[in-house]
Length: 442
Ligand code: SAH
Image (cartoon, rainbow, N blue to C red; front, side, top):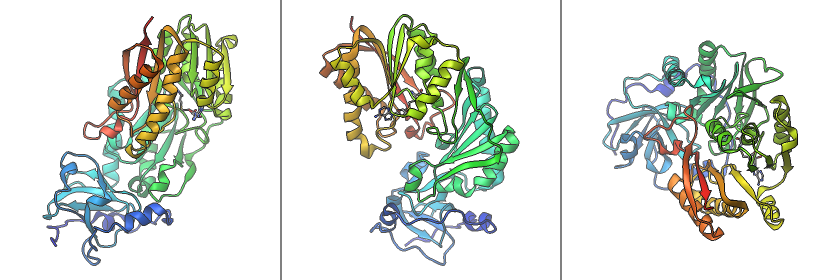
């Protein structure tokens, strides 16, 4: 077995010596699976902490993909704990990257840096955060909204870290062990760089269980304002950062919502999975004849009703339904209802490629029904936010749905998340949101 060449620093030990350990690792089936990988050799307990990959398994890192799966690891030396920064070596002992280690996840390490001389410390985080903030200012996004994704995880060089801005407050969401370890440092930097009235932590996504991390939801810095509102293209949206979905609002759909406004004039609109009314409000402002909006969440619909009123939109043209969309679409079909513009923006059906087949059935079902409910010449705006469904596959699913619905349709727009959700070229998984606007033949 090869011993790594000059391991240099063991940042796990050096930088964290005086830091308290947060979040005991609960035993999970996932962690059991990860630990009991049969092919992994026992690490050298007394060696400098580090990860040694199996022969040939460095390829994705050389292409600068930031994940190291448990199956690629030959051995882990030392006794590093979750969140430690470790050097990663190829089988010949050459340095590859500095990465945050997580023994409890199938993604055993996520890359912080490809530079051997880079130190993963507060300065490192300051540089990466400044860079992410500069990217947003450089794109001049603030003219469209005061709600913005400031840090988009892997795509901003900060795996597992999401920071969203809503007016003068920030919501931070940690999804992996690396940023979990640096949580206070990151909050301190954000406080200085952005000067928010509050930093709220929404580290309570389901995916944290897969990382062996506990759920956390609460104020991290400052005081939570009584009312949080974003102003997006002149439209006001109330945001519930404590109990709303994601960090409270779907910032990624900003430009797609605005596009809907331009297509809505005099149309009968159906908005499925409407959440707090995003697409519905734009359609109403764009002059829609009527908008029927459906969501399963009563809480989201309550906020949608508030949003409708605070934007002075015509209440009489809006109808809201608390229902399961799969069922509601069938009911509308059986009633013989027809629409000119339909929006389908469902939740994530496939978090990873492993769920793709089941997810594909879900997408096909709602899109087939959507096509059937459209009048000739009608528009279908259909989205998938599943990381496990590629753009190509999504288009194929929609083509299958149109075929089965017996309609001819053409794609008039290919859509993605807004520019504050960049996609790192070497990390295609970052392109989770894709949308198509289709026009069915007249
Ligand atoms: N288009 C929205 C975001 C949609 S998020 C916007 O622009 O803000 C997906 C929504 O689907 C959530 O509000 C969730 O409550 C809802 N949802 C999930 N499963 C559902 C189902 N089976 N039927 C109806 N709504 C559902």
